[in-house]
Structure formats: C-alpha cells, structure tokens
Image (tube, rainbow, N blue to C red; front, side, top):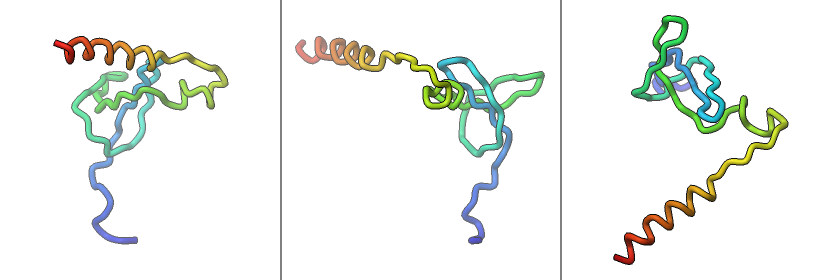
Length: 84
C-alpha cells in the first residue's frame, strides 16, 4: 500500500437523512461545520438528502419528491427578474 495517501483525520461522524430524520453514526473524514448531540456526546453532522433508510430500492416504497416543482418555481422567480 502507498504511504501518505490516506486521510489521517478519521473520527465518528453523525449522518442525518433529512427526508426521514434518521441518524446513524460511523467513522468518516467528511468535513463539516454542523454538529449534533446524541446521548450526551457531540458529533460532527453531515446532512444527506437520501440514504438507505429512505431510498425506494431499500425500503420497497415509492416516495414522490417534488424536485420538478422546485425547479419550475426557481425558473419562474428568476425569469421575472431577467425581464426587468
């Protein structure tokens, strides 16, 4: 194995699925400024849109996410400003 190519700052990090509020803790070197307290211990927090606890492939349930609606709202909002 090559030396000095792997990160040195592995630590326990909390990952939070924002779609269902599920939190799991694992070792990571992900950089984040957010923190969360779980059972009296403060962990760095990484927020995720989707994880294995909410992905339809793993859950077997289809969940409608309104990303197209958000994109349309964004375009409509800034199309008005571009005309002025």
